Length: 399
Image (cartoon, one colour):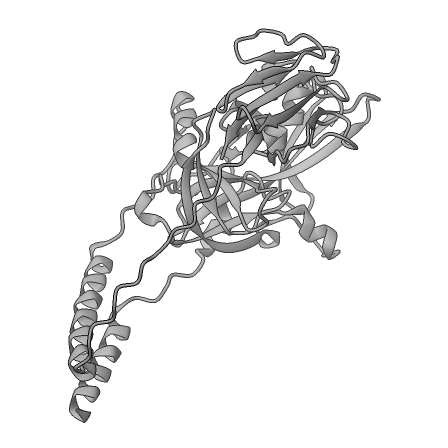
């Protein structure tokens, strides 16, 4: 018996030496990120500014020129009419070192935007892209960005260079496709906050698999990134070069196989050591809790970053008046009144009921039909409507 235990210990030691350790964060990722600032004049003509994160893409080994970020990071710049409307768009390499950026293309529905500099830069390096695979579910990932909350909490001395970026770690908890848009998202528990938007979500090799986008309003531990799969079509449409991450080398696979063999040997030895004449335990019945579907509203406006609101018997108002509206739009949002419309869920009929609150620009069904003021309209789950303009679409469903 003692010899068998010694053999099991020896095999376990061999396994630990054979299986590679978990990879740490690839520091090279920091050489590809950039802080983005956008500005737009408000109704009084005064400039207001926002910040976010982006990352450079391009051919491997060459000075990059193009940047990937979220569309909502540059939304105010777009709404202002871009540069001709008084908007400003810049990137910060370091303290007192910035450059003007130009909008190449964007997809508001996917929340992806592509920027470029006037000339390629040697101050940053392009990051490789990799479409995530279902087999990577549960794997370790890192979210990189410039969260403004970090600088508001602690008054740090900042240069806004790579070394001032925040890195949070977590794992991939789910791959999902968003209802209404078909947008492919990566769900993770790697913490994000304002300013992190547009930054890269990278795997342990340093390959970008997603663009950090939003957090859940219902669960503080749920965060989302737009899959790189949604970025590639925009790059290819505009003939923008990018590097794909290299496939893992064979030796890592051999290490894994070697570890698996050792694990099997250990399992066999331990089974011999611990085998006792016992009756097999009676099988236990497992029960799965079934959660009832909850009626929700999902704002498709880029300014809300995928915001979801649950309905619990009381009507929910939508509009620009943040004091009463659960889904509040920014002041100046085209087509949206202060108290624009309200929605509640009819439990008896299992239908959503939308009522326009005498808005200035109207509330419309997905087919373009305008809802008469103060006239409730019933919608089935997986329907949508919009406030004034199609960019203010709201999707309803049971989730």
